[in-house]
Picture 1 (tube, rainbow, N blue to C red):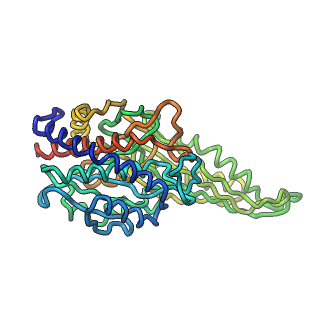
Picture 2 (spheres, helix red, strand yellow):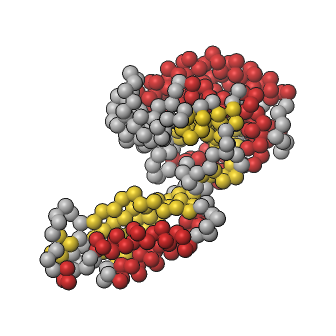
Picture 3 (cartoon, one colour):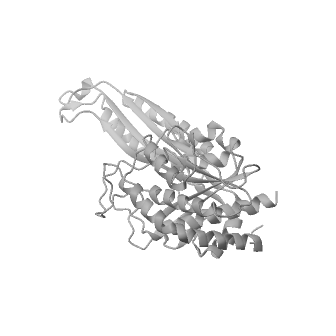
Length: 395
């Protein structure tokens, strides 16, 4: 299953030739999208711009997104994702086409969208073996997840989607390489909101109050120990504390309430639930020791992202024919709601290298992939389509 065929080799050659003609305009589109970012839930302008560039009619999807289909209009299809939303980040790149507002495409979604446009426009000149479904997903960067809404909408069934392909730029992969692989790719993720309540008071009379601040400090310091005692050390699990809020700005006021917000990242949703149960007990008993009450709210997020083994093998076989170097498999405790699609159909996520040894990280105010990233991402999406087509051939 991992070998290429002459038929698909020829299709790949024709697709790349057509792609080369589309890339200059796609690079300019990327700059337009970058200069006019829209944050999660406000992406309609971006959807309209991408649909116009593709010269396709899109049906509304998850409120501000869209979906369409080219190629054969019956039978199975292969879905290619483009994420729409930017981040609430003040850009610091200094380029002439920097963001014109207070948001920024600091996660490469502008590159992904421009690449998808180039792929689709090039594909419209070809005879495809299976339908190609470009879909534009809102709210990748925040909850409620746009991918979850799409999963629950029935759109994949309506459009006959048999496989889903995603590509994401990444600074930890060298420029020109694409990293993929079978199995676990990204973590199942969620959030913990921990609250501690007690009696506030005056700093001079601590015996008449509960020391909520110290209780919160002990909870924070003990979370990593809970992970160590709860999780198999051979299975990844992580709690990261992102926010601690206790009291006001006054030094002589003992707080009556504290809130801790964390993320939890594991290899499965079941493992996250086990950690949540353990943390709940730890919070309650620690709070009780200080005369307080404690509670935990667990907000499940994305499931683990699992790459289909057959798609991964086919992708590895075809990417070299498209001029893409093979990077080391990229696995992390990051999360991507692309994982929801894997609960519907076999799916594949790949990571397109934009790293040069000094590239800022994703979500950094200076993150700015080079123009060439549009072409590399487009080729990765084509490789994903061809890998999925090969998988459909043998069903």
